[in-house]
Every structure is written in structure tokens, then in C-alpha cells.
Image (tube, rainbow, N blue to C red; front, side, top):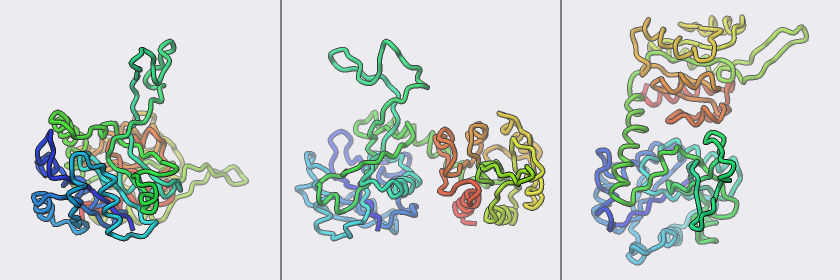
Length: 388
């Protein structure tokens, strides 16, 4: 079982009743609970609180996964370490030693469902002991004595060449129950890092943080959510590395071959039943892709599209269909897809996409690789999102 745990105290010196104060139109804690409610990986979330107002507010959400844990007063003081209430809970609520335990901070409301799900999968795949969330910070730091901490000022690197360092953003931590009980800490042993978007570095501790976090939420999350809720009228896909596994296959006569996935084809069929137009855009120009497009009965096929041309082709299709880019979904895996992925209403990439594509804000990072059902996974995500 995967358990989420959100500790909420009643008081807050800097922002009174911070955890239930309205944030982007909802109580602050609502956003983490909503993301967890929609998670496929988290089974239950316990809100540990000493506050009747908090309990009343949370019960009004009517989330199915949420349970209230009334924490002891001695572990609800300003000076009480978070580990104390975690240990209090785990001592009273016997859980399986190998259960994953996620400590979630309500002061990081920008955390999304895919962050929880992707981080859990990452930890399981890594076989490490615990995980914390970070952002990649590319800033130059100095010690008080006038010496640089993380770079050589005589050989100042360009920002794009600077690896930077990883800053703990406090969004959430994952560990196993047995490790927490043994080490009495949210982290243990071999620790993995889950990298989140830069704007998630904000934690709400002071009034100014509140206004900054609201701005980030509206710009990076809510604006995109509004796009997602629009009906998609055109679904476009890259080919190599997306509909295929990016492999280059040749027979003994030198004839090129490509590997496609039948589940992707069924996904296109499902979309067409709901009136969504289908298209393929690729930089390659082969008879193989032409034949696959005929088999899929796509509405649009553009081959030989040079670098940077995919967005222009899509705009041309949109003009013909009298739709906007917000009504387009696109899946791609490499740098020549980036401009289009950043412009459409709904974007996704296969698990084996390059890192620069995975870093695009709000892109849906799929679990499956290209050629192994990633396109179908994206289509199923859209159909489920819109309850089709």
C-alpha cells in the first residue's frame, strides 16, 4: 500500500489558518488532496491535524481517499518536528513494513498528480531506499568569507553549460515504513532525487510567498488545466521514436523496416469515433510511413518536415479545420518536436524521450516507450480526462 501523510497544525504565526486560507479560489490544502485523489499510485491519504476548522473544511471536499488523523497536542506545537507526528501516527496505525509512506507538504500546492505517480515509479525502478523532491538550481553561491561555493569565478561557465545543483523544494518525501521507524527520519539510506519544475521551488511560509505561489499556480497549472478541459479536435503524432521504437531495421537486401504497435492503431480508431481528426508529422519521408498512415486512415500525413516546420504545418492544418492550437494534442520525443509540444493545448512524450523534451512545463511524461504503446497511453489519458 502507498500512503500519503499531510501534517497540518491549527496555528501559523506568519499567516493565520494558512492551511485552509483561500489559495486560487480553494483552501490551500485542497490542491494537494485533489492531486492525491486523482493519483493511480496512492491508496489513501491521512491528514494529521489538531484543528476542528481544518477537519470541517476537509470533510466538505468529500474526497474518497482522505482520512483524518487527530494528532496529539504535544506534537502540534510550533517547535514540534514533523518526524514526531509521523512516528506518532505509525506507532498507532500499524502498517506493513514495506508500505511506501509519502510525507506531503501543504505549503507546496503546485505539486501535481503526475509528480506523485512519477516519483513513486522512479523510486521503485531505482531500488533506492527513499526519495526527496528537488529543483535544478543554476545560480552561483558564495561563502561569507568571499569564496565561491559551486563554481570557479576565474572560469565562469555559461548558464546553459552549468550543471548547477539540486535544491530541496520540500514538496514531498517518500520512504518505507520500516525505514522511518528504524531511522526516525523522513529519509533513509540510499536517497533518490525527483526533479520538479523550477517554479515548484516556492514554499509558502510568508505572505509574499503566498502571492508568488498564486501567480505560479495560475500561470503554470491553472492556465494549462483550462486548456486540457477544452475538447481536442485534432490529434497529431510524431513517427520515429513515438509511433516506432526509434530503431532502424534493415533486411539482408538493405530494405528499411520500422516497428509499429497495434495498440496505438486501436487508439486512433477510438479517437476517430469521437470525431477527432488524426495526423502524422515526421521529418522522415518513406513509403513505410505512407503505408502505415493508410492503414490507420489518418486525415493528415506530412513527411519530410524540416526542423522547426512542425508548428507551421500544424498552424496550416488548424486554419483549414477552423480550430486553434489549444484544440490540438501532440506527442513527440525529440528536439524537432519541442516547438510544437510547447504550443499545443495538450502535449505528451514517451518515457524514452530526450531529457530536454521531458523538461517542457506541463508535458505529460508517459510510462511507456515509443513503439510500445505510448501513443495509446496518451490517447487513453485524454479519453479518461474527458470521461469519454
